[in-house]
Length: 353
Image (cartoon, rainbow, N blue to C red; front, top):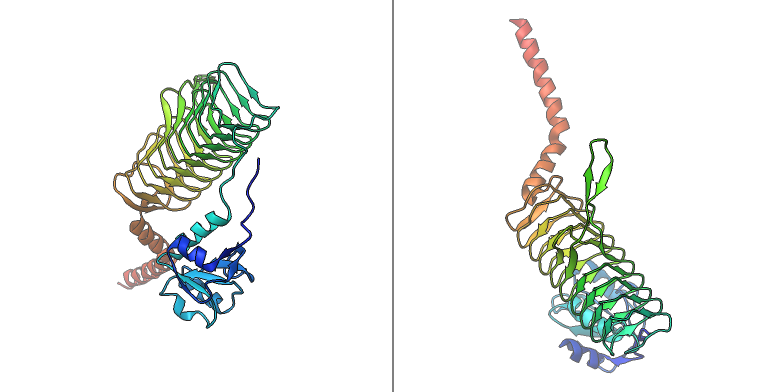
């Protein structure tokens, strides 16, 4: 099990070829690492994608800056540049070259791993220390289970998926191709389902559904995705979930939706495609959102959102409406003062009659 170290050196011309850029300056300068523009040192490449950081062009010690033609004008003479249409995207390509994805030894089986009889594990899959693969599981080609991963019965993990340390995957869960599940995630635990008795005590409702995760999904560290009471909790292909998110039982999340940290989606809610849910957003249960919805941070969604657009507030409202309401609230103290002054004037006029 290893993580490849950064490559010792690339020439600027090689990086320019990688990102489809044009070099201004020294094409042969060696690049041995990457860094932020305000921290980069000799031999490192960096990027500038917004005018907000243009002041650092004159200060950076970087050997090379990836930027756009529009921002290159403020660069000092002698600074080597790679000119591209999208500097940040190009820098990500360079990052990927210096730091390839995590790779375990192909086909390894650690001595402490437990693979029960009846589990099917592809010969190319890598199973790290402390992993437990229960009866009926199917582990596909090039899957990597890093360490202490537990697959309950009848879990299937499709090709090229990486599951990092200390992840628990509940019975019947299906995880698609090329997914990344980060450390500590819990997928397929029981949903929060209880009947309240007349005396205030609770009776557990069996949670007998499953979780289905599509292809190219990323699940952040310590995120939890509950199994459905019946049927399935569905995370569609391309979904990206940050750390510390809770997805409740029976939720459906549409393709290419992204959810930031500490958000919570209550039971049986259905999110549309390409939603963007910011940090600490809460959505109540049994509602739906349309495709292409953006909900801003710390908003509370208490009813279905039927139209695409930006939403903000608690309860969440269309963005411009929410901003107008916020502006009106800020004026309330002055308006109240004016109202009381008018009351005094009216009272004085009334008394003088």
